[in-house]
Amino acid sequence: MLADKHILLIIGGGIAAFKALDLIRRLRERGAKVTPVLTRAGSEFVTPLSVSALAGEKLYQDLFDLTSEAEMGHIELSRAADLIVVAPATADLLAKMTAGLANDLASTLLLATDKRVLVAPSMNVHMWQHAATQRNLAQLANDGILFVGPGEGDMACGEYGPGRLAEPLEIVAAIDAALADGPLKGRHVLVTSGPTHEPIDPVRYIANRSSGAQGTAIARAVAALGADVTFVTGPADVPPPMGVRVVKVQTAAEMFKAVQDAPAADAAIFAAAVADWHVANAGESKIKKDGTGLPTLEFAENPDILATVSKMTSGRPKLVIGFAAETDNVIANATAKRKRKGCDWIVANDVSPSTGIMGGSENDVTLIMDNGSEDWPRMSKEAVATKLAAKLAEALA
Ligand code: CTP
Image (cartoon, rainbow, N blue to C red):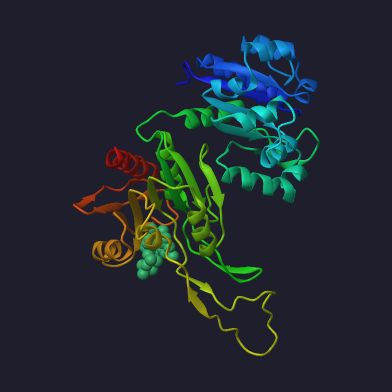
């Protein structure tokens, strides 16, 4: 899978740097060429000699190394690879990337590159959870940086939680996805997924039963065909796929903004179960039982994201696909919904509780297009995703 692929691996400082050695070994086993770059902090944890011996390639460490610079300038180095991987990426390195600093070889390569960058963060739980790091992560995701991990577990510092470097095989899978060469290579696909949460007050919200499983499977399937994917997800039960740009939102209004802010897409798939209404008189503080009677919630309509994108007069994706979650007259309602919203295709499914589809692992759909419809037999949500991704690739070809 990785034969003839060239990966520039930046190894940051951190106790997990030793895992980068295993990563190099696994990448080489799969035929990849790995050019290692070791930061000064990284060299406190693994030796330059072990890194370059395992990589079988010259190791780069210093921006101002005249010999390296004469052989291959840092700009050329940043562009020679198919993919740049940062593992482990420290909080410091993420902050530098966010700010666009270029004060050492690693940060300069990251700023100068025109290639995709995959980052595997690793740090202490509190550093990971710090508002500054979370802000940086959101900005980097928005900039198109891909992420893998971190995992959750016991940490070298004796604490427990998120911040552990993803395992080498997980990083290899994310590299595979980032380099996937398929019919959707060079295409940008936007996918919405999951439910939305509409606050009643700071502690309560209105939600729906969507797990995000179908949207997640679709994002994974289109990424596997080589697409560059922006995945806008509400609070789902399943983790987002690897190797895609993830934008996490809570409300329909936030989802609408994330879709508007996303890079122009060739195709957009709206699998999210977006709340139709939000609470217009949501409390700014917790609504109390203060003896004055029951609260009355007033609703206001949410923007229809699918209809807005379908009716865009400029920059409309070539193919807009909606979902129709129905409990009665499924096909008739879905057909009318396709017309009303102006999307090209609509995937109709029966979400009556008896079908077990909402929150379940299978789906039973009818794909309604402008030139007819297809009834697909009941199958796993992954299989629906694979079939839909293949049809999309065909339509965009
Ligand atoms: N959708 C959207 N924005 C909304 C509501 C729905 O983008 N505010 C999208 C969904 O992601 C889905 C499609 O519109 O692709 C249909 O969603 P569905 O819930 O079936 O339809 P509604 O528009 O909510 O209509 P109704 O509640 O009348 O069935």
